Length: 199
Image (cartoon, rainbow, N blue to C red; front, top):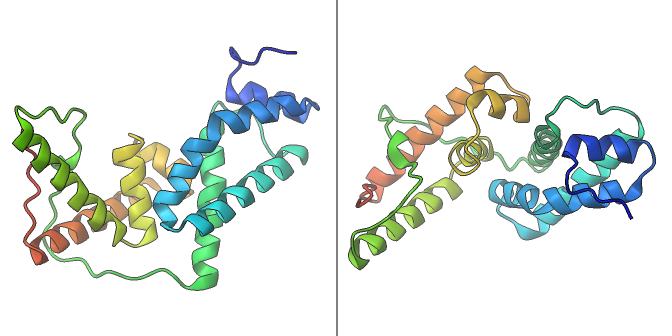
């Protein structure tokens, strides 16, 4: 039995193309949770997320077998882009996309925090509540805006990486982020939410 631990995802993909089915099993094991989390965050529906996840891997298998993958060092981006395209096709088919009108306010860029170390239990509670409020607001965003916020703040991707994963320009990614932040600020104002983290 071959040891795949030291192999990159790209190398595993190429091994699968060459006929090594266990290499694909390893690829699936490495990527399934992260991919499912991404899909679930965007679609917010477990049944739809499962369908998109399965469709994604069916397309991955098909494209690998058809030789439509080249080792570019970005297998995870390729995988995410396939999932993104399936999600967008689903939204187009079901007309689930909602348009949220932005307001003039725009400054939630300080929401990202790598460490949320409260000085006491009260701070921890406040921070937990703030993050819960942010997640609720993100749930209300249109899928394209929710996706870019998730990729930027939860997956820590650059806007260049986001544009590559979603197949849109960097300017479009930046625009989606801007409107997402505007919409979240509007929601916070409407519901009188305080979004300051206690440090």
